Image (cartoon, rainbow, N blue to C red; front, side):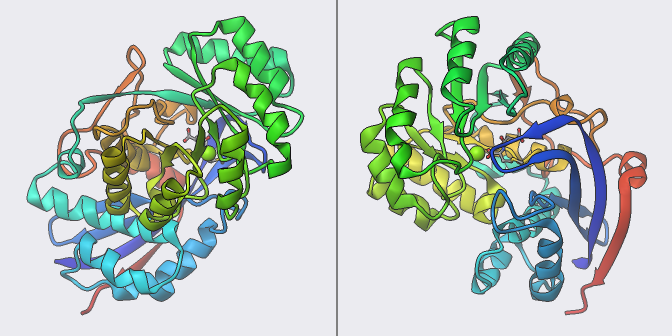
Length: 367
Ligand code: SMG
Ligand code: MG
């Protein structure tokens, strides 16, 4: 029986600023959902950033929609599956929904003594990990940072790009590290269809993919771009649900999909998108939202499914945090172990989370 839901607000600094085409993140404004029962609890992490720049959601807005609309839908016996069904009436707000779904899943799987990985259908016990490299001040900085991540063992490098900090950056990395290194770029929607000829200049660098070159809503623009650029197009921001994924694939807007559970409303929807892509032979990989150990653990479980054939942004805890809220995830020979105990397999370390916490609001479940 679920007795109460807690919203835990906390703060953590990043080890270094992370610059994308839309913002520079220096810290994470965290929101965890904790489902509390009589003798079990479940945890979920909300991936929304502090400001609505990556997508329309932002963390304070997520808290608002949780307390006004989503938490009141939960009764003592609500399952993750029921929550997903009931909350479909609320439009959008995928990151808010996903955090609650994750906490409910962790709660019910712990009670059932099943790991999230097994529940989702994982076929791997460890996953190959890539790292996302923010836009650096200079090419020299970029080469130094990439060299450090290579030394850590990351099997794939993703470069954040934006207009003007793109072709030369990729060329420099290719020249320094060779043509065999798995390399891809992420524009976070910074280009327009008219940039097709410019983006086609990336074709000579044998990239795995170009991630989200155009705005989220411009799925049709990606169809045109896919015809004019040889490098495979991968969608991130645009893919907010199974239906959008199916439509985008049907019209050839992309040939690869980045699955982020927070962006699509949860792990159950993520599995549906994975299954669709697997059935169509479309490669998928697990995206990241600078999650702490709670979200990272659940993402690793998802990334262990058979369709995740490309390395994800599932890097080690120390890529972002000096001290993670859970036991840190570590990279060993380019791989990270998938948690295999019960639920998401980790819990916050009480003292660590306590020191980071600014507020805990508790909502009693009376139904
Ligand atoms: O968790 O390693 C991670 C972050 C990976 O680049 C990353 N995420 O568009 O894919 C993306 C970005 C979104 C977050 S940027 C603040
Ligand atoms: Mg992206």
